[in-house]
Length: 321
Image 1 (cartoon, helix red, strand yellow):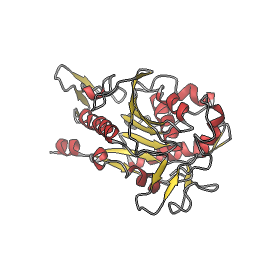
Image 2 (cartoon, one colour):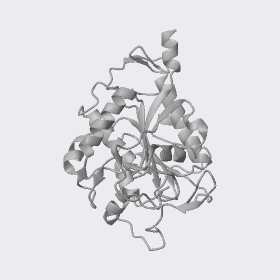
Image 3 (cartoon, helix red, strand yellow):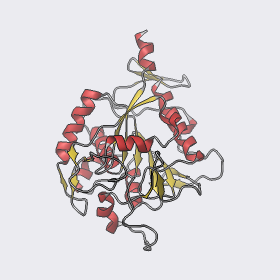
């Protein structure tokens, strides 16, 4: 009976918000997605450890208070209060967890990627089970070589999906982060720095991806991982990569409509082909439409981008909503 209850328990995801926003704001953003995607998960949306140290891009759009996880310089190579932030999150994860996966937007996704790399290298959360998966929305890599040499030393084995916007100033840094993961699923959208609305194809892809995560997790019982095809039982010692014999999680991610397959650094690119997805975000309460703007992380990194942009391609004063 106890084993059955354990299997039925929902998997937990820690969701980290963007710079100078809040956990409740990220929860509202994710709420735009089809409810079936995370119906079998418990999502936790904590607030950042520090109150916002300046103006928030969502003032007047979503009520305060606003928070940030840490601070940084204009080149995003020097960080303030990062160690304190990491200590806080490790304590939170230990006391509120265990968590099966991480989800993050912008600064929250960047921070999540660091936690995954640090845990894989045995730097932190040694007593916490390895994170099984990661959902990154406009995430990026840290740039300090001292951090990179540890966090990104080896390919990160957690299953991962990365949302990358065509007009996002963090497009290239997001691709760099995805390249640090083993066989990442990349879902592209035509929008900017935002939590995108998903078209039907992207919704089906993400729903299939999360369903496969649930299915894989259901094969783990009493410390052993049973492969679904019955070929073998392999011991899950807390460091093994969750293997699942599931076509939805192999190296080829097929669009439901079969229109295209593209290979990008070993990962398939999901093209969100929806004319209704523009660079504007409609608030759920219908009060306003606001342009998406740059997270300060984006501003810090835009000069590093290799892309050529015209003034009309990205508006500097767009809001991140």
